[in-house]
Length: 295
Length: 337
View 1 (cartoon, each protein chain N blue to C red):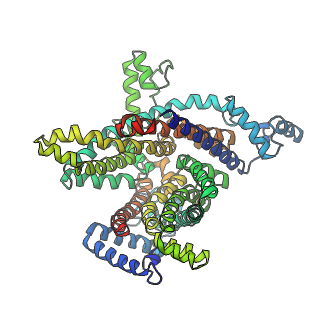
View 2: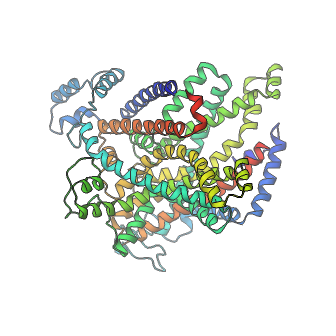
């Protein structure tokens, strides 16, 4: 998405450049958003560097040092198999980040495709596709995700797919509304009149001018995506042992909660901080982009 | 109104059919042989085939779906393989626990979310507003399972004020089942001790479940109260010299609460989703815990049953909220007849 915002060629280009600039200035004026961006950058960096930062192997078990309280040696303590909790949190960061973007990628790609078709063609196709989104939206999100994840088989990739499948109808509706709004604009009509190929009309004229709400929605959804996925992992439908993943780590720590609290507290805090940062950024993007996009 | 209702109910039926098809198809992707599971480990191949025939499991999926939906319309959701009972009986047993938890959360959401939203809007950018706004960001970013576990750690382990889970303590006597709500039933039975225990058991799970939605309702109320405050009739009321307090109570609150109602309709879906996790943390014997167990043992009849019933309840709640919205909104009344 970031690449799209910085896009400088094509009909949407001039506005995109302006957008990027106003985003920058607005962020500069906003210390909380700046801090959140810095935090997200840190998180991303830590996820990439991840396992290299800790001298402990996130997967090496050591019965002799199991369930050790936080100390200088093990900053966040060790778990029931003697693995270093901090090392596992660092290793799990990459999973959470990747999966969050996986969910959004699935939701946005499928949703945009369906929304474009539905909005551009209208009529019976639109009616049919929208009824299908109705059905998906009628489920409580977690229930459908659980059903899907169970059907596909419990692992992290399938949980990601399941969550993405739960999320796409929102994007379909969003893109459909934008498409309907834009397709009646004069420049689209003239492009059609000039005999521009369909792909060009859809991608260049409609998508490039209608992506802002999608960016806003996506920025606000990253956090929720991570939460849903962590929830699935927590009830055992996501990451399977021994894979280091934050939700699964909290789930593991549950049985030791009353004495070995660090097994729950630290991985949970990692999820919380991660989601919080993305929500703060989403909040400001929402504020800036919606006023820009409409103006 | 009648025509609107009729239209909504028709589309609701279509959605429900779609949902049941999707759920049925999905759960049959689960790699398990239900006939083998039903027959048990020691069953011979003939016995398994016999069971498959009996339950139409040897038929094509489309045909199976028709048998299944015929059963559902007659109130037969099949049998759970884990509890060895009809799924409907299980649902009846576990539903009140979830309903009680949901209602308790809704009460918390309404009591905290709406007034705080109004207060924050009245003094925009004041300390109360800023504090609550920051709080709402924290609340929506908090994984429910983490919050629940931390609350257990603090209020049970350290303070020992509240029970760690379940609906009642072991020494409590369960009241006769009337509504299935333990708080209500114990009151009906006149057993105050049990009532107190049931209420205490309800605190942590319902707070955990409500946290995120309180934040959403707070924001919605704050935003809508903000736009009402900018309206001409509020300016007119102020110019007549009506006190700010009276303006808030008489003019702003009734108009600002309406949009919040629609949000609560959507939050019911969030609450149902959250109850799965909250119930498994607090060992709350409701539908959510039942669903988690069903998934653990690939009990697909139970999974389909729960998904269909819970989703139907959600859809109905949304319809109810929309109807309520029209009923209490004088602007909508004329248009919908």
